[in-house]
Length: 364
Ligand code: F6R
Ligand code: MG
Ligand code: MG
Image 1 (cartoon, rainbow, N blue to C red):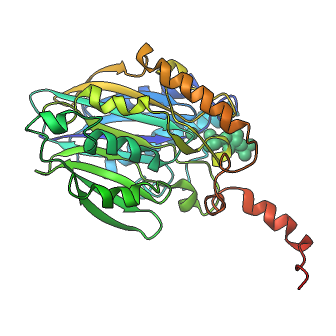
Image 2: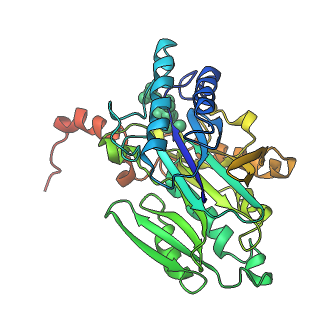
Image 3: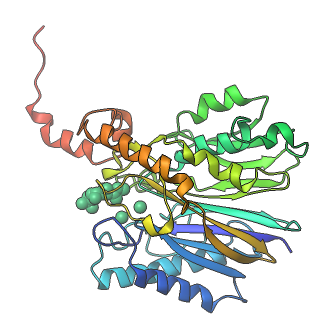
């Protein structure tokens, strides 16, 4: 049977403020998943990045499976209940509906899934971020799968020489397109360089084998009001015809600016950290990313390895601190604050609403 990996996440409450998930919620989620191990699911691992509760689940039911999504939904509801009892902050904040309706997409949680035939050995990397948006993965996926200066396998390894296919979603117009690299790289970059609107959803080998899958949910667009950023997740397969583990994580030594951070309204550096540092503190951030590495073996998750818990990533972390300083010194000014069209989806329009009667016309 094929193996499916489903990474499903939600912020159902945290402490203090929006900084980290409470260990009792992690325990509850892990226990609820254990109860169905061997029946509904094959294996699971629970962790958090900042205020986001992350469920990593393996099973044999394929993507978008109602039973798996309902299981995740029930876990989030149960954890939200505990969060409410403890008066954790933002308890239940990402759960937009009351009743489950077959698929958690569109209900608040973020989902990245992939189904594949296991190879002889299948290394898998799960990335989880807080205080940023789904398009944050664009830069890194491009580097992994299309940039030979990052991934020497594209040049050296005959099994990668063909390149990859990227599926890009337009979150505003609700349309999708496939780009084939290397031949389409300029066209691909024309879109994914605008990550608030265009996000890479999948990457495949040209023979159709799945290589990477991301969550693309934009919570504020679903709720029609500001309910936090979308704090995305991503699953990437590595080795033997895919980028090696090292080629998959190396792009994160580049400290790029992403949208999110405080109030989902600021650009800040995207900092790779070990799980012990996956807590958003300084100015509710800075935006950060963790990566857990596994071997998948008959659906079992062998691991995890905490990939960014490594002094080799100290330099990028220090650079992120310096960039953070430069950005923070702008205070409420752009480009630290997001551009006005992106601020549409924050609490700023409420301020304009309060002030609109005080505006008058300019003299002729
Ligand atoms: C960002 C985030 C936090 C909150 C901020 C204000 O995604 O979750 O930065 O936006 O702490 O939170 P409220 O409005 O709940 O006081
Ligand atoms: Mg929160
Ligand atoms: Mg979050």
